[in-house]
Image 1 (cartoon, one colour):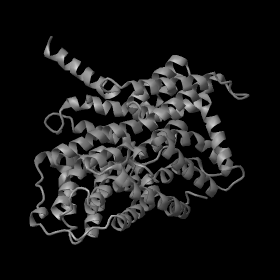
Image 2 (cartoon, one colour):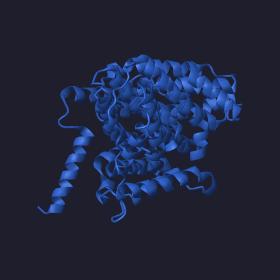
Image 3 (cartoon, one colour):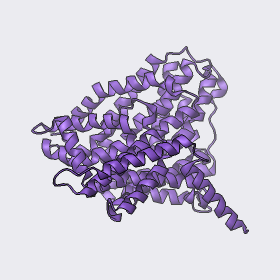
Length: 482
């Protein structure tokens, strides 16, 4: 066996382990079998009058997939691959719809962002930025929490990948907590980690490439309705309230729910890493990318293509900091499969007629007929929050995007505003399982999900009561909400 064949075998074996895990236990196999039977039962149910039977087949497959994503019985990419295979096998939708998400520029924003995040992590650029900011906030525990918010928020502009930022910030925050005298399990340790993980995930919703969730929302609008949202428009819509105001809210809630004594003084903690040649090159690539993102209203180049070009630059031998094989990293490719399927789900719902069934049911639940555009905004936002809690972001975003057209038509809410209203709704994060980066970040930070619940539930409730209405006021001021 040649070295190339051995490497190919190793990659295939690793890909299989990531996709289905090592020897899944019987209960997982049984759970998948039960969900397949549920999908079959729904598919065989007679369609409502005027609807094709194809819509029930698609509804069964979508229900199965959303439950698999929500429960994570099998890895999410595996559930996505199963969904695509069954859609093609049953003819629930045409191939153009089933794979439409893979043609969206938003998917390349994810791919490029993952490469940029890896480059920032390995070159030390992200760690330098994080420590540079954190070193200025050591006067008190409240100042430390504020420093973590500021530092991670800056990284939201520089590192367009949740996982990339976690790899950079969590080790720095753990070292900061240790330097400050906050042992694992203490209020100070929990508060700082929650700020870096949950807080940054929430605040990053103000920056288009800063969150995978943002890209899913914009990508669903692009796939379904041809709505293109520029970097600066997204920042205008979501930055002031979902970004800045939410950051202040996170700061006050962390200090209130997890109070801690003043940090001890440690002069060595003020030392900041030096920037090497590789980090400077990554900083240059990021600087050009941010400039192009910020001026996309002028030159018209989609954020996804900018991110892809920046990611490729990070791979070029002699200039980039990543080996070319990172382009086909199995774990990264599986994330792309999952995201592409999430974006395709909405198109499958529309073509098969499921969106008509779902949007009708949601419209009846919300009682939108004859209501005002403001009512439509709140219906989209709160239903998005409810569905995200029940089915994670992967199920909530495409479902609500498909329902946006009916809610828009019934209330007079502009269609682009209806799609974007998903963002304030899913910013209410009640539980860690709703977003995979939060689960991963808490594990990295040595904080249990149970310890995170009081802060997350409180933050989500305040978001529903205060942030979502405040965002409506902001949208009304700028003319987005009639």
